[in-house]
Length: 411
Image (tube, rainbow, N blue to C red; front, side, top):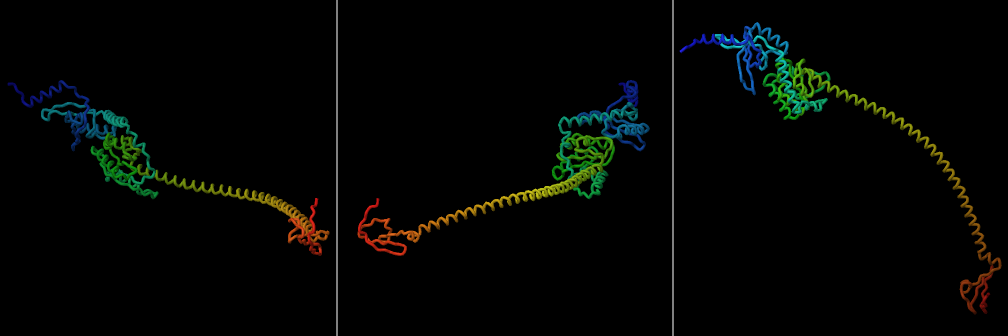
């Protein structure tokens, strides 16, 4: 039976690869592991993922003289270091050593591919948020000008959290703000779930009227957590306004995009809150001044109107008094005239009655020669008389007694 020694087999493989493969290939892969040894050589494990499962894996190296230049250039283009989790387009030379076996040697990396890949993934998340109708939900909430309870989602050890609290607490305006920290991991693969848990705590307690998401500066890779779909979906739909200040001046994360208000740094977030309070206080002061001014003008106008009313009353009163005086004088004159007429009328009546009384007085009648005759004390004209009845006749100075001897009818 023909046979080969191990080294002969390895040399055969080596020769075959050399004769049948191109000098190098551009390969798309994800960095599964990355380590740099003391000599500056970079050792990687490249993987291909499908449905979150590894379907291919190979070891790769970047020798120190290449890695120094390549890593610096890559960071300058992409804003981040080569690191685990990045998908790269690398120019790879395939080698097979009879002692060390099969390996891939990375000679170049297309940084623009990584930038484009990250943007593609980022755009996919944004498109999904738009499709689900949640992208602008948090922006539609009313932002309190004077928040009473601020929930801070950050790491207790983060420099950004310290900067935020210092700026907030040492404000020169004397504003007292109730701020509570909800501790969370702010970078790495565990950050999204940690921040989501903090959001749940804020919601369950139901005390906050404003949420701030702050962290210090860091590399571009540190910000990848803030492009995570699950985290951004929670941020977008959170029922309390969210302000972000995740400490990166150049790039905008999706968390910034879905938040109610985005600011670059934690200090800027604190200043934004303080400026809202200053604006509110100024509006209250202006309102008080306007009220005072309006009240003063109203009082002045009222005094002018009151003075006019008093003047009008005086003028009208004088007119009324004058008119009433004329009327009173007229009435007085009429009373005098009518009183005199009434007195004259009654005086005339009295004169008439006195004359009538005089004329009807029996004494006056007697003086004129008349007499008055009675029968049984009653006037003879008011009763029927008979013969032999006694008559009493009165004259001016006599009373005559007589008897009836005959009665004749007077026609």
